[in-house]
Amino acid sequence: EVRQLLAAPAAPAAPAAPTARAAASEVVTSGSSQRTAAMGSEQVMPQHLASNNEAVELYAGASVDVGSHHFRVVDQLGSGSYSTVWLVEILDRRPGEGNAGATKDEQRVALKDVLCKNHTALRQALYEVQLMLGLERKRLLDDTPPSKLRLPLCLTYEVHPNALGSAVRTAMTCLPGEQLDGWLRKAADAASQSDAVAASVGRAPPTWTSHLQRGCEMASLMVRQLGPTLDYLSTMAWHRDVNSHNIMVSSAARGMLSPSDTSMQASFWLCDLGLAVDSHTWVSQNGEGPMGGAWRTTDIGGDCRYWPPGAWMLHCFGAEYLEERLDYCRQYRTRLDVHGLGITAIEVLCSTALSSYLSGTGAAAGAHGAPWAQLMEAWQKYRETVGLWWEMIYSVFSEGGDFGPIHTWFTQNDAPEQTIRMLDNLHQALCACIGCSDPSSGRTLRVLVELTHSSSVMELQEACALLEEAEVLRVEEMLRQTPLKIAEEDEAGLDEEEEQEEPPRAPASAVASRAQSSKAALLQEAADAKRWAEKLAMLTAAFRECRPAPDGKKTSSDASAGSANLVAAPGG
Image (cartoon, rainbow, N blue to C red; front, side, top):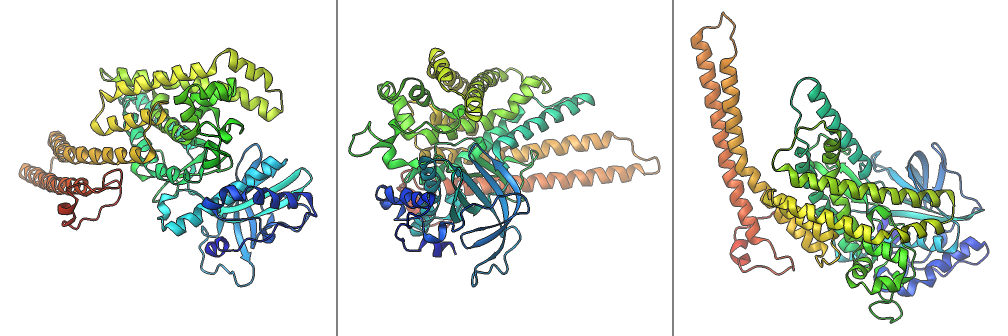
């Protein structure tokens, strides 16, 4: 069905009877020449222009038609300033388009309802739809694996005129899990509660730094999963709103990720292309040269808590001020999504550990905790400061007030310079933590610095390659440590078992025999685990030798390594 939708021929613009419908056609056709090379020549088809004069109100239990689908609204998934996302269930389709055999989950999709009060908003809402369709078309033509595009898939859409302007309703695949920011809050609360319970029963709680290992692993996994998606997206558009609220996290096995699940079970997805812009016209437009482009005149978008310094410079002092500062200008023009992903990764790394650090429920960290404490302090300062700025902007935005005083305050308090100083403190703390980290974590921390530094030129492909190598290092270290840990735990367990008082009726010989038998069995298991570790280490080494270089060129050892006939999935 998606292939048929994508292959549908372009239709001429609809008649300009209702104003909203005429505007919808004009919106797409007016900008089509700029996006033809990347996205094709989509227009608003007649079947996507609603014939009714008013959109059906959406609420739980309501029935609504969008395109060829008939839906029943199940529940509200979330809402923003101008849009609401609903969980809906497919009831039926037009004749010949039945969904027999579909599971309940397959019949449930997300319906995004965007209110467009003006022509600009309508253009942006329709661009989001066309971008999703264009990405899917490009993926099919490139024969790109679906796993590389961790975004929702557009099923159908419709434009409705209404009293306030128009509404664009888009049905798309429903991403699994929950929003990452909400999950991080739950994980932090769970860690604090666990530490408090341990302290209340006289058991020593884990150190607050113990949460950093899991945070580091999850941050690495998130960048490795979403980096390719953003890199693929950048050939057509910049997302401009990468943050923990627009990232979904789930368990690859069970759907919802529990705070107690291991980090490697996490699966990340990117959502909400509502602020995306054409990546070609953004940086250069109408032959204006390297400093031309839509970035100079387009409203700054996204959550200001994830803005790079260049966004604050543009907000406070304008485009000419920013273009004189080359690194910050380049970061704003071409690395908005890279910076947003990097700040989100630092958030994933620090959130749970910071909660335990501030609550005082975790045990002291010891001598090696000083650099990590420096990182906690730097992250807390950054989050509290930009969080206050976000509240100031959002309060005016949501209540319809005057932005003048807020803009003056940011300018007088030099928000750009404050942001630079806070990011410098974060980078210094991350670099200090590299010195007291294992090789895998140290490499991850280095990547986080590169993703968020204004002078960095590291691209997402290189970052993901470094993190893949870091994951191999982590697995190698885990395999080296596992047999030793098993043997130590077995010995400790046997010693404890031998010290426990046995029932008086059990003969001493039976006790000795059972202990000796258990010890022999456990030592055999440890030996087996060591042999498996050696085999896996050999496979890991072979995998690293036959991996292609980051630029796609094979290394000199590829010819000989290829004869091993090894097939390894990304990430080892």
